[in-house]
Length: 410
Image (cartoon, rainbow, N blue to C red; front, side):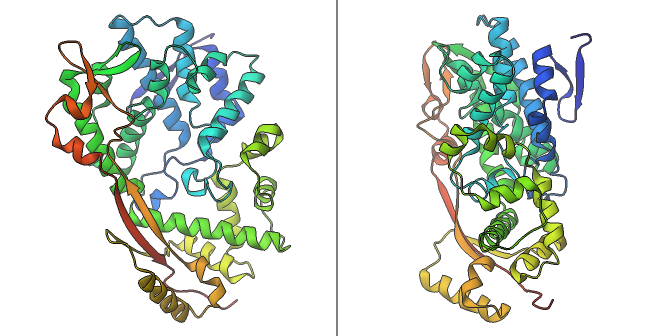
């Protein structure tokens, strides 16, 4: 590079872009699109500061990866310059396949296609454009590179992705319980037998990390108001899809219209790169633009949910530990139909129920601790930490959410 490019990040300060190739990738339209996808979707309805983007997160994760690799080199792990750059690119592009509103629409706009698969297809597409320069990054991303610890840094229970998003989301929401001490965790990282390990003296930092992640899930990611807003968005897309298939015309972006009208599978994306290119034109603005246009639509379902979003009149949500019985759900449905004065066949657009679950530590995907005697053991067995044993239990909460009122006049 003629001159080193530097970004000023609110969480870490100045971040240096370390190579010409990485700068070219960041400059690519597929990556720049991440500026227009919020990291936390609709969470700013709860925490007004949560307006940071997937672009912020990807750059931050790349920065943490560089600090981690520098630290591992200091501790004696040999990492070539090619491996170093490839690992940075793998983490930089790990979320490139996210669509509008990320997780909220992952299974409604594109049914059953996880963003990880679209990220992989996008990296493959970029690799073609860059003449195979991302070959090693792809192998790391797919866990096909012989040095497995690189993939662990990109995707595991203690990966660089989590270290960045927990710090970043904590910073922008102001939820101080999410503070994790990523610097100390990175300093405690090492590689033993091709595994990422944490030195024994860092065990309490890991306990804090797992605890903070669990708290962030309940307080931020699965906050009941966020759950409500996401359900509303899913219902809005379902109604738009139903109307589109019934022949209703919309004034919306060409890309959004295409995906509303299609029901593509992952195989379709794999066989036709044009579908992926079209998908990579979409961002949060496609949806918000539609919401603005639909607020006066003749269809009362589309109109009402759009107006609700614009005025933050969200569905009322009840969250509890016990499962709602079929009788309770039916009673709540009938009450909602009566209150809203809507046809029974439309109730599912204004009423939903289900469960959200959260765990702190998944035992099968272990975090390894390197003891002072040089043994590698699972964090849950490494010390007397009852918290970690408790956190390995999956906690489920059940919800019912329903519209409070409707505007039935037009």
